Amino acid sequence: MRKTQDMSSSERRLMQGLCDVLKQLLSKPYQRHMADLLIDAASHADMVTADFARWAGRVLLILSEDDHAFNQANKDALVRLMPDPTVVTDLTGGHLALLVRMDEYMDTVRAFIGSHAACS
Image (cartoon, rainbow, N blue to C red):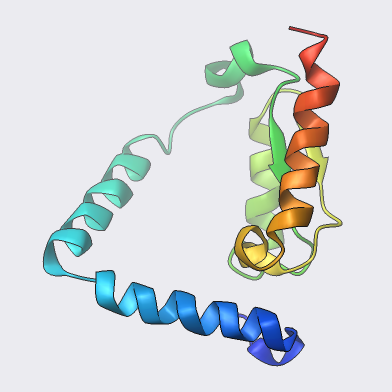
């Protein structure tokens, strides 16, 4: 897990709140649901670039440089798997950037959608 020492005090409070909520939500049914999700993901592990062809040029990958949940080999494989993806790497915050830097994350997603709206 990413250490909280690099986070601001408001980000640390947010992460503490998230952890508190997760502790309350982790129940046996939820754990079964997550296990099912992982089994489903594993059943799609053999997908190839052709499986994503219809989304060519319409995939946004936000791969934070300081994300330690996915190593560089995972990130590179994902980029190779997607046909002509837009790759953003300058959003900091690691794998949890969506939560701790939501405004920046949403600005990135909005810009991507806006740049592709005219292409649809």
